[in-house]
Amino acid sequence: MCILGKKKLKKLIDDYKCIYPYDYNLLDGDGYILTVKEETTLHYLEHKNLITYEIVFTPPNYVAHLTAKSKYGRMGLSFLNAAKVHSGFIGRLALELVNLSNDRSSITIKRGDPFMHIEFVTREGEPSPYMGEYQFQYLTDEEIQMYIPILKRTFNNFDELAKTWLRNKRLQL
Image (cartoon, rainbow, N blue to C red; front, side):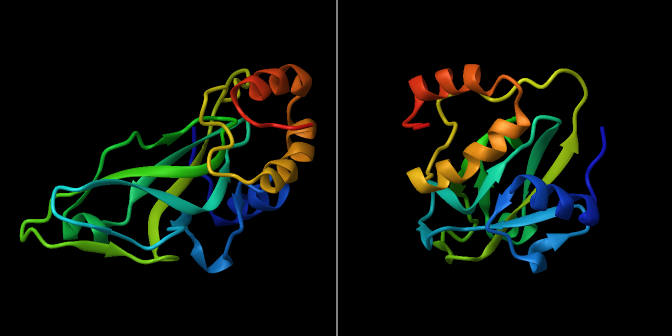
């Protein structure tokens, strides 16, 4: 297992659209900094899901890990969900947050704010693509169709996978 550096991550983005769209300036030494799709304000003790602006695709030989930018932790924002993106997942990420600020003030995250680090880690063994109900979450039909050619060339058993994805979502082939 190893974390991809900037040069290898850039190649992964170019080859698989593992982050789309992406801004070269948001590549850091060990990953990419995801941004927020819509401005959100969390009041004290309020729980909300924030959706990433970027689509994430974790290719079959990788797993992604998430870490919050420390700026938000210092404000009192706490992240509730797991910090892993399964191999084979495609979609926008839902980040579950709660405001636990000591001064009980509201916290606003603006659209496009750098928010969460994502690091891609190599995995060993047979690819086992994500088959859960959240595959393609928060994607338009056009965005899903953009990934079909990538999925076809990435997974030898695409037709078999597509049957499951069709049952779980609105996938159209």
